[in-house]
Length: 417
Image (cartoon, rainbow, N blue to C red; front, side, top):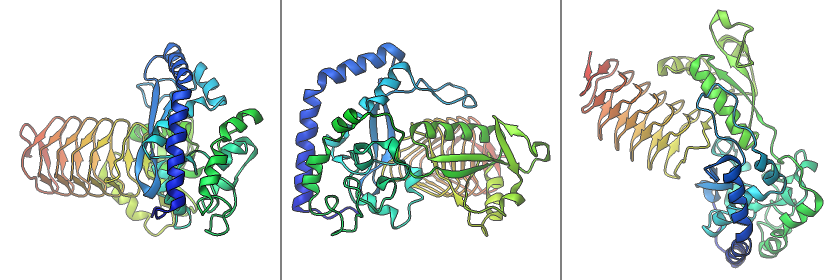
């Protein structure tokens, strides 16, 4: 839960508004020069937007100047790389300046713990979730003290103050988020200047990346491997250890230069890992999930940076949202569901566990897709329609009325075969 309002938090918010406003006005020539440099170096878009989690666990769109090349159309290729101008922007932290707009909007503060991505927040325990009680910051303890000099500094432990680096247990924190946060903010908002004077070349002070295995080394598994590479370009979150696949032909093989470690039986004997079920067929994903229920393996929720997840959208553990997927508002998505590229889900829709939406599928408002439903590429499900568990809707079909479970429906309108 967010920290309750207080005189000090109100004063800090006032400082944020005044400071961000003055900085945006004063730095406007620099912002224009940077935008022009990005455009001349690699074209549009000039800004990069990514979903991060803010105060109270509310997702928001964080803005940066784009420092990576355009993503290739083929997801099996290597992820984007830093542009020529992007390297300079990152070295001097100029790519972060558009976040002053996030500060003005009330999504961020000038000072606080750096905002994290939804899949990392999904793994937070009660202790780690304490950092969600305050607004994330444009700068914090790690940025002020030089990120490269720290392997796992205070900002990596969410039980510490994001500014002063001491234990954030109320009275023991010297500045933030306890009573002196106003003065801490006034001091720490000069952090980028001091950081620049100290030399800025430093990797992010983040927790160790989580070990991850992908279950399924087929075409969709390769796409998810590319998604993980893209996520790691933004924040080093995952340590991709390899694939798991029951195909004997893949035993000890490599896929995309990633090793196949073993089969699902081997996986059931592993510990301290996260897994993503990268099998296209929902029923097959459900069968693997059933085999893993007795293990302590954690399902990994993977959300492509291009996906905007509204605070009213509920994602089940193990959900995969690929590039361009668009759940709107009040959408419920069950465990291990897959939304492939550029599919849309309308308001109040419910997607149960193991649902699979192929590229370009469109699910209208208040539709209900029961467990392990597959909707083919470009298919449309009209509002208020219920599709029974295990049913497959063919590519390009239009579903205008309820469908029974365990059937295949094709055509316009779709009819069970």
